[in-house]
Length: 364
Image (cartoon, rainbow, N blue to C red; front, side, top):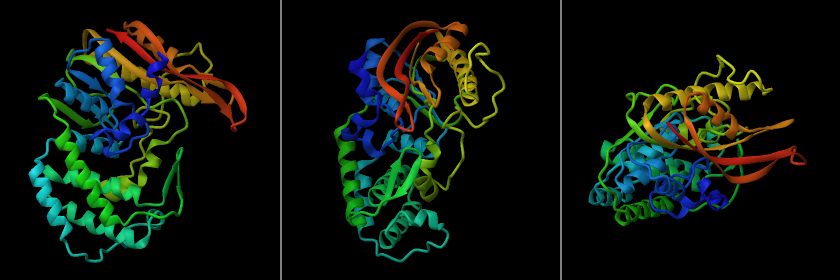
């Protein structure tokens, strides 16, 4: 299904109101979720155990489908919550106007380490912390709205360059922070006026997909994308916004493992020669699939977007191996669609093999 390939990234969301409030590189697009729901006639409740910044849940809110989301990365869980909330637009407008008239007072930034400050112009940084201190005192029903606007504006006005799993300082002209911040707020308020959501129940928690707090046989469909078996360290590239705005720098093992415990307890494939990091990954994926099986009703439909792993000496076919785990658990493998193909290379020179990005369709 190559025509869906470009939808397996967050890029198509960049121009969509509310979906684009927080750029989550590891996510997939609204249209991919819509296509999956329509093509496979999925009914609610829908579960996304790796909900990222909330794309699956937002689509469900557009369609009026009850949904559950679980996310282990604090900054992503926050972004999802901020985008999914119902806001009083008139209250937001009044608070925005009041915020504009706040008289600047130089904030205390001594508590912030140098490795965070290096990503900002000092004057810009003072503005950011000044508004942060005000936003944190706001009522709970509006705080997340202004905080996500602040996070978005902070990143745009920073010297942060996200290169894979590495954060680099790239000095460049940045927009005047105050002006940009209020432009962002105005745009977000317009977004809320553009989209009309339908009534549905939404449950979102910051938690571990391997031990979900859901009842047995309570879910009709799953749409998700677990972390790929690769070398991207999700926690590192979000550490600046996590530290500044959430007070978190949690070192979750999200890069190569699914949850917090990075000690594999069993090898799901003793007959397959796998790198140790892949053994741990599939051990955790087995636990996730076991939980999905537990919470899903009979005949529930499961859609999982997954990418193969690239190693110096081989390509690990995650799509086939995850399907094999699912089949051993009793899932029916309905289809494996190839969305994208790309070369696995070592040192950007030697080609190791072709990696697939696939959409797996199971049924319980």
